[in-house]
Image (cartoon, rainbow, N blue to C red; front, side):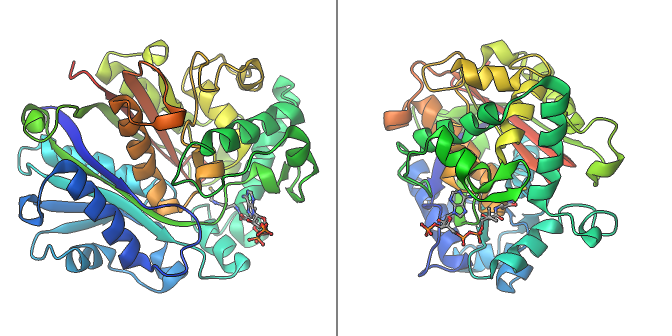
Length: 387
Ligand code: COA
């Protein structure tokens, strides 16, 4: 049985002074429900991702929070947690629930409210996604983890500081056309290279920001999809893979094995390959990770990700536009909401509703969402066509 997305909703990403966790969830959820033209009584299950709501706002048990504040009790709700991949795991769980035949209408989403704590507590909460005993305990931070990957990639493949910065410049440019993006500010290569150093070689403008936000999508069986909309978007593959929790035990830190595994399974399952993709949302929590991701997803050979971004082929209008939404870098990265927001971007693009950032004729798209330093990776492939 296939699965389709028939409704999407997203909040603006950024700092929300007036909205807490529940207001963000409700805004995204209600937009998705309205977009699908359904009502609360049609919904049979909620699956929602949140990475660290307990540390960020002191609220756990977000499954119950989702059903309560959306007025959907007594339907069941599941919270998924896989660090920054929390809501892609929610999406793959929702896909399984529909495929099982038990549920015919499932809301999948994600939320995070990160800006209510000081920077050092946010860094501590995020460090919970790495190996606490063997990495965070010794002072390693997330910018530090990706800085190590960047250093090695530069050493091994000759990737340049400028090429890494080009990811940020491109994604800030794309975000100019995304009304829900955190940053609407064009930046130059010089801005990136002269921005304050965070973890060598990564600078402020190489990092995704701390953000609040939520996103949601409505899943139904593919055969029912046209009852809801003329333009359902079909989930052609939903694939998750794991790797070691810590970076320090990996044989090669310039590649993310779980991306390769998840992508290969997704390509096999969908019958589509990297050359069939018209766009991709690639997990650019730090600029270097977009370069590594484009390689591991097969959009270029290993080591050539820097040259790919330099060639301009990952811009809108290029061979494989990457992060048309602005990516985590410029759209923002409220960690538990990011996977669901990637799904929203693919749906808007594949429906032809992405406005100034529209990829012309887009029929197939891929979303790549990473938890931690690559310990969890989820890849979704979506299409306008059912098969
Ligand atoms: N990109 C662009 N601008 C950013 C930014 C980013 N990532 N982070 C902050 N800014 C801007 C702010 O808007 C602010 O601008 P203003 O002075 O014009 O208002 C300025 O920089 C300072 O912001 P501040 O919040 O004080 O920054 P900070 O030093 O506390 O935090 C980082 C900056 C990079 C350390 C923080 O964003 C961070 O930790 N990012 C990584 C998050 C992460 O690890 N996520 C998980 C990935 S696996």
